[in-house]
Each structure stands twice: as C-alpha cells, then as structure tokens.
Amino acid sequence: MGSFDTLVVGAGFAGSVLAERLANVLGQRVLVVDKRAHIGGNAYDCCDAAGVLIHPYGPHLFHTNSDNIFEYLSKFTQWRAYEHRVLASVDGQLLPMPINLDTINKLYGWSLTSSEAEKFFASVAEHKAEIKTSEDVVVSKMGRELYNKFYRGYTRKQWGLEPSQLDASVAARVPARTNRDSRYFTDKHQAMPLHGYTRMFEKMLAHPNIEVMLNTDYRSVMHAVAHKHMVYTGPVDAFFDHRHGKLPYRSLQFRHETLQQAQYLPAATVNYPNDHAYTRVTEFKHITGQEHACTSIVYEYPSASGEPYYPVPQPESAALYRKYEAEVEQLQGVTFVGRLASYRYYNMDQVVAQALTAFKTIAAAQSFSFHP
Ligand code: FAD
Ligand code: UDP
Image (cartoon, rainbow, N blue to C red; front, side, top):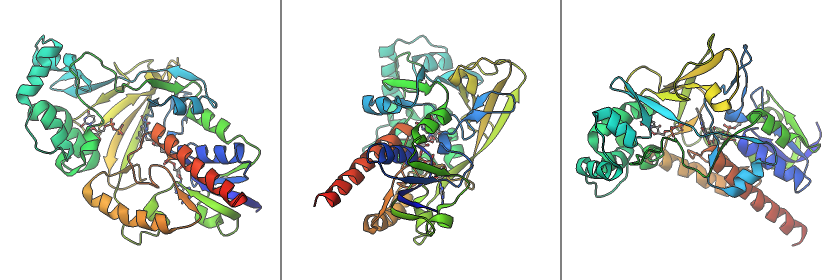
C-alpha cells in the first residue's frame, strides 16, 4: 500500500491543515484517511438535489480575529464577505440575538438609550461572587427574566443539561450588548469561502505528496500502511478504546428541506429557545449568497446519541478528559489535534490555529532529529 511519513486520521480542518503543511513545507508523503465519504469533516458543503449549496452538518460561519489564520486560509480560497445575523423567537416576536438594545426595546415596548439599557441590566443583574456556570454568566449580566426567555430553554434543549451544570464559557459565546450591533460575531474577519468549504479543502489537499482515502476507518489500514508518525483528529476516547469510560458528546439530527420558493426566513438563522424540539432553523442562501429559485433550510434537533459533534464543557467531563490527556502525553508518535481529539469546544479558526501550532512542533522535532 506504499509507505508514508505521516498517516493523518480525519480530513476536516485539523487533518487537512496538517496534511497540507507537512507535504508543502516539509515535503512529507502523507496519507489522509477519513471514514466518511468526503473531505472537509463537519465543514463539508455540497449541493442538494435542487442545486442549492448546503452544509449537511449544520451552518458553518467562518470568523476570526487572527490575520494569520485568515491569510493562511486565503491561500486556498477567495472569500465572500458575510456577517451572520440571528433572530430569536421570543414571546411571539423575532428579536435580535445576541440580545442588544433593539432586543430589549422591542421585547418590552421601550425606547431606551444605550446608557439606560446599561442601567436596566445593572438593575436586574444578580450578584454572583464567582462566575462558574453558564447560568452565572447570564444572570449576573442581565438578570433572570432575560435568562429564562433567551438562554435557559435553548441551553436545556441543546445540551440536555441545566445552564447551571455547564461551564460559563458555553453561554459566554453569546454575550449581551447595549448597542445596536446585530451581528452574531464581532470578529475582525467574517467571510465565507467564495466557492464553498469543500473547494477550499480540495485545494489544500491537492498536492502530489498527499493521498486521500475515503470511507476508511484508520484502524483498517494503520497496520498495512507504513508510516513514521500519526496525526489523529477523531474522538480521543475512541482512540484509547474508551478505557477510562466514554466521554460525553452532544449530537444533532439535521432535518434538511428544499422549498420551492426563493426565500423563507427573514434572517439567516432563527433560534427557538422556548418552542419546538429543534433549537434553530437556518436558510443557507443568506449565508452563501447563492441566487436560485428554490431555497434550502436545516432544522437542528439536539440528541444524546449519534455522531459526536460537541464536547460537553462541564467539570465532570473535564475530569474524565484529563485521564485521556495524560495518556496522550505519554504516547510517542501520535499528534492529537482538533475539536474531538482535544475535547475542546473549538470554532474552525481555533482548530486551524491549533493545527498550525502542532505543525511547528512536528517540524521542530524533525529538524532536531536531522541535526542532533
Ligand atoms: P471534524 O471536522 O469533526 O473532522 C474529524 C474527521 O475525522 C471527521 O471527518 C471524521 O469522519 C474523521 N474520523 C473520526 N474518526 C475516524 C476514524 N476512526 N477513522 C477515520 N476517520 C475518522 N465552527 C465555526 O467556526 N463556525 C461555525 O459556524 C460553526 N458551526 C458549527 C455548527 C455545528 C452544528 C457543528 C457541529 C460545529 C460547528 N463549528 C463551527 C465547529 C466546526 O465544525 C469545528 O471547529 C471543525 O469542523 C472541527 O474540525 P476538526 O478537523 O477538528 O474535526
Ligand atoms: N445560547 C442560548 N440561546 C441562544 C443562542 C445560544 O442559550 O439563542 C447558548 C446555548 O447554551 C448555546 C451556546 O449559547 O449552546 C452557544 O451558542 P452558539 O450559537 O455559539 O452555538 P453553536 O453555534 O456552537 O451551536
């Protein structure tokens, strides 16, 4: 089957960035295997039967504050400037989410200024000596009523847990504002790959030294393929045969629909914190800018079983992960990178950053072994 310098498990952001760097910069021969039928991992996109570009694994919005990450990915794609906006369905209205000045004014029929909104938040905020959980982070900033209307139901649905059981970092991803900024993210760079994520991944992996094998579990080839090093981007507990117990992951079921109309939603995404079994509905054409007579949407239904999509940020899972982390540190010859392999709730740009850092470590070790 040939011999390779590195066997990369997983063709998502983590695996593709490392394969590209190892081949392009170090001239390594790299085999990338993925058990799925496509590259791109969860960021994979493709056209549905009607020809509308969709994200089969849910909406993926690229955003980063890092010039380096943006420049790096720009080697493989042009961009379409895009700022994501979300509405939350609360008390019969569609209101800007993250909560901002307009959210408060529309919700209560007020016309507060920014400084009055700040005073309002301060008047309803609950004092917390320490901000530990997702409940703490919200109620200490905007009080219990807004927490109940916008956060509690969504979080319970998404995670199957109370916000008080989740680390503060989860709800802190969506902070409230007192200005009128209605963007979901405030990062310096916010853009979509002009021709989609999959095209970007194809360019990353289009190197004569890189071979890609799809529909292949690494366990079925790892003994047949000679390699000096492995990069593993799958779930960390699966790598070790769950020897310390299964890490909890949250999954989603996606319900995709193609509609015979040009537009369906008033914004790219509508969140349903309090109604329905799904958390949100997203219409892809808002995000991709595609013009088409049909439109495609996706509903996200959280579930405990299924593909592992989200690590669960809570003290119990962190304690279990530390046992696997100790194994990772002991192991020679395998680099663990990515959202599932490092059990971190990482966005795409954070995974790219982690992969580029891992590449530097591998490159330094290689040059050390050449010039001891
Ligand atoms: P993955 O993309 O999961 O890739 C890992 C790959 O490894 C998979 O393709 C898998 O098939 C393969 N694999 C696993 N085990 C094996 C095995 N045994 N053998 C062979 N192959 C294996 N991030 C953002 O920045 N913005 C967003 O808007 C955003 N939205 C998201 C929405 C959803 C619903 C989800 C679930 C995630 C979202 N993310 C978003 C996060 C983003 O998907 C991840 O940060 C990123 O895709 C992780 O890349 P990765 O390479 O670590 O993992
Ligand atoms: N969240 C919420 N209400 C919302 C949106 C988000 O309570 O309308 C909380 C919820 O706990 C969610 C977390 O904030 O899991 C992070 O939201 P984000 O949109 O970043 O989630 P992702 O896109 O990663 O699924």
